[in-house]
Length: 381
Ligand SMILES: [Mg+2]
Image (cartoon, rainbow, N blue to C red; front, side):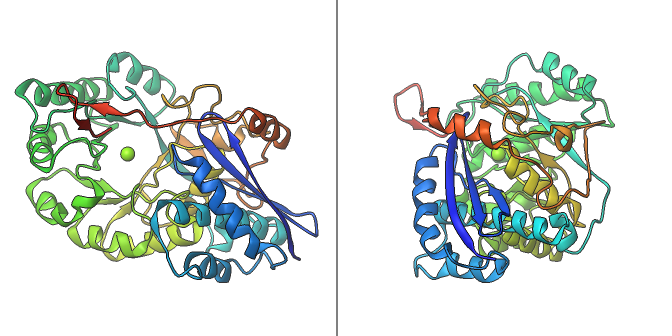
């Protein structure tokens, strides 16, 4: 079997899909994307495709090595995301070729269902009580929200109190048997993060995500030591070597993104590395159905898996949502806040190719918002 075609599709709301076709008619799908830089990743996939044409798609590990390393310059979000989407598509082809779900090829299932959480509150959280109530009524047992919107360099008492009020409001709806995770989104300075973590600690959040920017990773050990709140990070780390210092710092939850951190192959390795540090894995996935399907395949075969992010109804999903490009919504029908395992081959989904090709004709030009402080200076989003 040989790879004969590699195509990419720029589809709303902000995604990029990759389709790899073989001479035997087996087709695999992946989602190589950096949100806000999708066109750049598309160009990277085009360059990597030069090597892939004519290759045996089942040599996944060898292709991962060559695509990641043979360019001499390596790593970073663009290349690692391009490799990630290709890797997903190759695993999809392998599963369809062997008639097995990807998790069966990675050692077999260790669980029958995967706990997922729902997003509430958007970028500037408001009307939380109502939104969380809706998610609880829909069966979810965990939600995640942003801690705050644009935030002063050192939080004011009002800003700090607003974060606490939000988490308290969430806890009031959720009670003691459900969870709320709080995403700091790298918006806080290290000093503010420390102060806010101290204040929300008694409300027992599931975890606090990205309390520090990735470039401040050298401060993680002190931050972890200063708080009882489990610290999560990893959506902006692109491989196992970048996770190593965060894990050694004592993070509780590693959050590799299946579409950024080298795909199924590398996230499976990151999960194993995390296990050696007693850390749990909660893959980042505010993305589309292929990235989520890849995440679920890893979740089904990963012992130290905690919970899965998913984008259904997320504030970014305008013009299209999680189910817009799949033929059968069943793999993403969450019952009691859980995705059930199936034995469908490959990634376990059927992509609606006609819908994808039609959406690519429109494309998208999604960009991250640019935030500024009141004095006009750049603010972290
Ligand atoms: Mg995040």
